[in-house]
Structure formats: structure tokens, C-alpha cells
Amino acid sequence: MAVLLAAGGGVYAAVGGDDGGKKPTAGPTTATPGRPETQNPTPQPTTGDGDSTGGRGNGESDPNDQRRAGEAKVLYQTPAPEVSKSNLEVPGFWAMKGYVVKTVENKIVAYNDEGGSKWTLSLPKAVCAAPTSTTEGKVVVAYEGHGKNSCSQLALIDLKKGAKLWDHAAPEGGSMGGGHTNVGMAQSGGLVGMAWFGGSAVIRVSDGKEVSLEKPSAGCSIDGYAGGKVLLRAYSCTNGTAKLQQLTPSGSIRWTYTIRKGYKVSNIFSSSPAVVALIDQNRRSGGVLAISDDGKKRSALALGKRSYQPECGMDIFGTNMGNCEGVAVSADTFYLPTEMTQDQGLGSTNEIHAFDLNTGQKKWAVKVAGRLLLPLNMDGRTLIAYEKPSYTAPGQIVRIGPNGGKPKALLRLPQATQKTERGFYSATHIYRDGNFYISTNRITGNDTTTSTEKLLMAFGR
Image 1 (cartoon, rainbow, N blue to C red):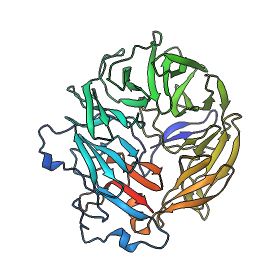
Image 2: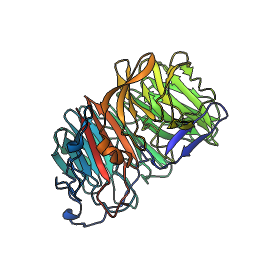
Image 3: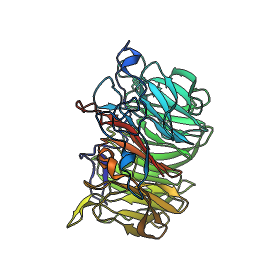
Image 4: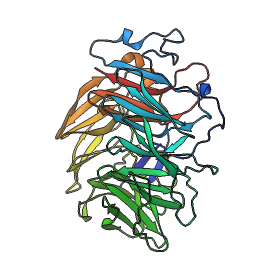
């Protein structure tokens, strides 16, 4: 699924495709009580395309044996483990120094860049929601509680040591009581914002206790949070008004920005600098706004007649609004991918547009013939992007300079894993310190003939 943004009067819709969605809403899953540990072993990385024991499996060779000149090395690829149901969402993926950490149902596993698991931590039930940001190597995750479909238990995980530091129930709150369904989470510094269908809360990372925070007036409810450098929250009211707020590290309100009437925040692309998308009650796009550090309108992006397609997943209740992929931001520029189009002779392609956050005007556009470009992150003033694989060629990581121009390759992915690279139904992509990671957000469980569905893939030089 992907968000489709268009200029004023345009549409705002969830658009589906064979590639599925990125960062789907982190909702509750159903674990099988009393399931033997042997039925859900820790998935082990291997350089082959086969089983989880480190062997080649199915007679397939190590892709590094087929490595061509200039191609990246496959550090490891981890098969998706057997899970309790098909199309299972597996939220939670963090890149640390020298390793990454991934959740799968009730397990949280750290994988070394050189291969092999670093540590494994088991929780009583399946992880159902998790922030994308961490605080000094620690992250608060939510896992299944006692009620049906309730994502109501919280735990602080030390990602450096693989240890659980505290564990207790999430706060009860909201007009509909607890519930804790369709939970979205965002972490910044010492705070975590949680929003669910009918309720919300802000808690401290240190102990998980709820922070007493100014509540919206009657008829208003929290829509969601976004973390990272700062914590933002968005709320809307039955009278058609809506606001965006930045919280201080202690949990008070630093500033409040009033959205123009009839619209509300649908996605928070960046918390600092603040860049948000708007929709009206009919889910039609209201454009993209940049908000200054003091809570004033900085600019409205001049989207023109083009449609834009960041990958934000299908989030029916809007509680996971800070988890979009396919966007990047610097202090003065916002990078947004256009909708896929069919170019004659080039196949499916899109462009990355760079917008000046001070003026809202487009600075430049870049595209690659027959490829899809996905902004990932910034390296100083340089944009890092993922050039997705085509039907015949693998993807690569590229860098684009501050003034645009032809993308330059940083990491060429192997031809030997092109099919596997394209096979992720829904994935998170991270490029860090010369390594590239693809982590699934959903295990389909539909591959019954061979063990080709992957949990993780890691590439390096």
C-alpha cells in the first residue's frame, strides 16, 4: 500500500500493487497458546537461499559464488520462520552499530553484520506495535495483552544487551476505554506516544509511567504521534478543526499549530523539521505543509498537477502516522517520490522531487530509466536513495547531490538475489555505514513449496 498525494482537489487514497505495503499498521496478532518452542525457532541467517541451518538448502548455491565484479556481497539472508498465521505483521526493526534487531511474534533477535545471531529475547506473547526510533539503544515495544486483539502490554528492551528492563500494562485511556487495537507508537528521547482506536497516552521510556499531559477539549481525540528528534502529536475534533503539537522532553506542549478548518493531519513525514500531509473528511488531499521550529507555517509545497506516492502503508485509523517510507528531509529540503507512471520505452518509473522547505517550490527532479527511486535518508547534504530492482536487473543504492543530477551508485546489489529482492511483500529498507538491509514487515506464509520467503537480507562491500 502507498499513500497517493495530489495537489488541491485531488485524491488521497491507498493504492495497492504486487509489492504490497510498506510499514503496515502495527495491529495485534494471535499467538498459539502453549505452542512448543521448537515450532518457532530463532531464524538463523545463511548466505544461501535455503534452510535455516546455514546450509544451501533445496540444492541452491551461495549467491556469493555467483557474485559479479562490482556487486555487493550478501552478508546474510534469513529465511522467514514458521509463524502462527498467514499474512502476519511483524513490526519492529532497528539498525545498531554492527548489527540489526528484528521482531518476529514473541521473539526479538539481533543479527550480527558478519552473520549469526548476537542474542535472542523472548516475550510472553507476540509483539504487535513498535516505534521506529530508539533512545540510547533502548526501545519500548507493545505486545499482546490478556484481552482479545488487545495490544496492551509494554516492555522496555535494551537493544545492546538483549534484555527486558521493565514490563507492565499500557495505560487505560480514551473515550472508548482501553481496547488497544490498531496501536501506533512513536518514540523520542524520554517519551513514547501511543495512539489506538479510541484512546491514546504518553509514557516515559525510563519506567513506562504515564505522563500527565494537557488533553484536547471535548469532542477532540488524538490521531497519532511521530517521533525521532522531537515528539509530535496530531488531533482532530468533531467540529472540523484539527491541530498539530510539539511536546517538550518533559511532556508539556511546546507549540500548537492550527490546521485550516475542514482538514486534519494524515501523515507526519518528519518531526524535525516538521513536514505533514493533510486530508479532508472525504480523504481528499489537502497538500503538504512545512512547519517551523516555533510552530508557524513555513511553506505549503507546490505539488502542482503531479501525484506523489510515499510508502505509508494501509493505516485505516491513522494511528501509525509517523511511519512513512520513501521520504527524506534535510534542514531546508524535502524529498518526495512521484506516483509510478508508464514511460514509453522505459517501463514503470517515477521521479524524486526536491522541495525547498522555506518557499515550498520544487528545486529539481531526478529519475532513472525504467526504475523506481525511493528516498531513504540523508548523508550530510547528499540524498541516499534505493533504486528498486526491475524485472530483470537487481536494485542498487545511489546518492544524489544537493543540486540533483544523475544518481551515482554506492552499492550495486547482486544479480543472483534479484528475484529474492523483488519478492518482499512489504519491507523496511535501511542503508547504514555502507550496508543495506531489507526487513520484511509481513510474513505471508503463502510459500508452501520452497523456503524462499525471507525475514531479512543484508548486503555490504
